[in-house]
Every structure is written in structure tokens, then in C-alpha cells.
Length: 211
Image 1 (cartoon, rainbow, N blue to C red):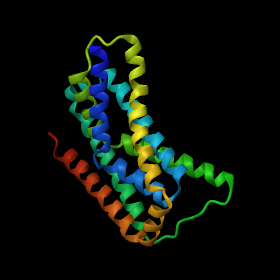
Image 2 (spheres, rainbow, N blue to C red):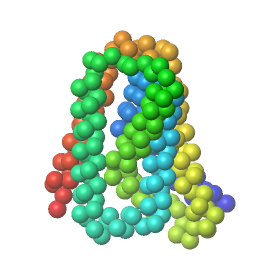
Image 3 (cartoon, rainbow, N blue to C red):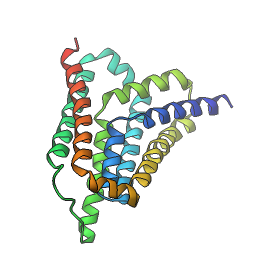
């Protein structure tokens, strides 16, 4: 019973973190409106896989590594910030471009593959997520976690992350959302690019000012 409550507490805290607005939400929302529902869902799966990777490395001791080897965290922040700035420039620069409609199965497969990796890399680009994962797991999970729970935990994390972003994708890929997006594409894309650019600049600035 105690283990179940601990797992529920960790997953609840991670869900709250996922719901909080950030680059992941921005990317899934824009992908769902600009591309398609299936693209949004594949981006959500990418977010889930990113969460699994974070949970596994934290269980393996990444939190201790980041605390004791500052240059690794510096490198992660710098790389993550530069990646978000790259996305911001691409989205801002393409704000006036018309949305391409895929007319072949090959085009659709290429699109969803791109959406998956966009979601995955966006999730992994924020090293603060690794710290949040580490802090939550260290605070709420028992240290003597049974093997079965250790194996199941990453899958539960996937359900939380991919589940939430799938809800976002389904809600924002509706026809009404798509109509609003197409009507205001330039402004929405520039807002999304601005948010990602701001977060990217904060990460780069934090990396540069790190001791």
C-alpha cells in the first residue's frame, strides 16, 4: 500500500509538471493544429519516450552525476537552449508559409516520423526536466524499490506524459481549433516561436552564467 501511494505521488507530481505550460506543450499544440491529429499524437508519443528516458537515467543515478559534475549540466543546458532557439527561428521564419498537405502515404509516414522526433528532442532539450524528475523521484520514491516496480515505473511515466499530450493533441486538432489556427497562423506561429526562443535564451544565459 505504501509503495502504491509513493508511485501515485510521483506520477501525480509528474503530471502536474507536464500540464504546466512549457516548450513541450507549445510544440504539441502547434503540431496538432498545423499538421494533423496523427502528427500531434506522434509528437505526444515522442514526449512519452522522452519521459521514459529521463526516468531511466534518473533511476540509474543521473541526479547524483549532475550534482557532482557541474560541466555536464552546463553542457546539457547549453545544448538544450540552442536546440530550442533553432526551433524558434524555424517556426518564426515559416510563419507566413502555407501548410503543405501530404498527398501520399510516404509523405504521411515522413510527417509522423518527423513529429515523433520533434516531440522526443523537445522533451530531452530541457535539462531542468531531468532535475525535476530526479528531485521528485528522490523525494517520493522509496530507495529500496522492488525490481518489479523499478521495471514498471518507466512505463507508468510514459502513460502519464504521452497520455496528457495525447489529450492536448486530440483537443487542439479539432476542426474548430484548426480553423482558428489557419486564420491566425502568422500570429500563432510567431507567438510559439517567441515562447520557445525565450526559453532557449534563458537556458543559454543560465549555462553561460554557471560557475
